[in-house]
Image 1 (cartoon, one colour):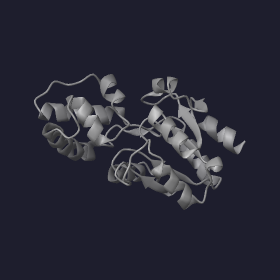
Image 2: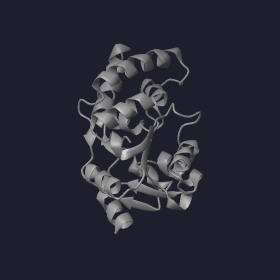
Image 3: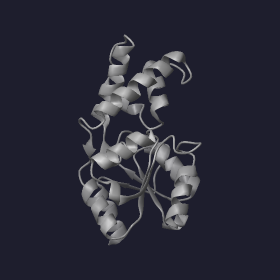
Length: 207
């Protein structure tokens, strides 16, 4: 979701730096914070505080971050250009879509609803929906089962190596987007296809 459907960078940066201020620490560069996104909130805060995930400071920081972010997660967050049109086109064509993100599920569902997209998705799953987060394939395997779709009928779209590794683990087609948070990670984990705009994927899938 983050870096693929929504440009949430500014709200995440502000929330992380608000957390650091709460912990009496100086702010971090926005680009550095963006590079920490993709493995879930606990890892984001651990990296932002330069601590291990189970460090008591991270536990305290995460509690503040989650409370702050929930209040501000739609202050500046919006869909990337072309995303709404692409989702509308897939939805109209009867394509079954789901969100699989490492962001906490309640936040993910609220953002999807807040942006007026809830009816577009079969499911919205977050980092705490399953025993394992991406790149473990349990999430996408569950979605395929619920959608009645085989791996050969499934496309995973994402902005980072985490998403590509998830696609590979599940044996599905991997589409990367060039406009997300971490497209540089495609160097080590290249997708099957990279698009600059999700409407390109619509043309390829729907013709």
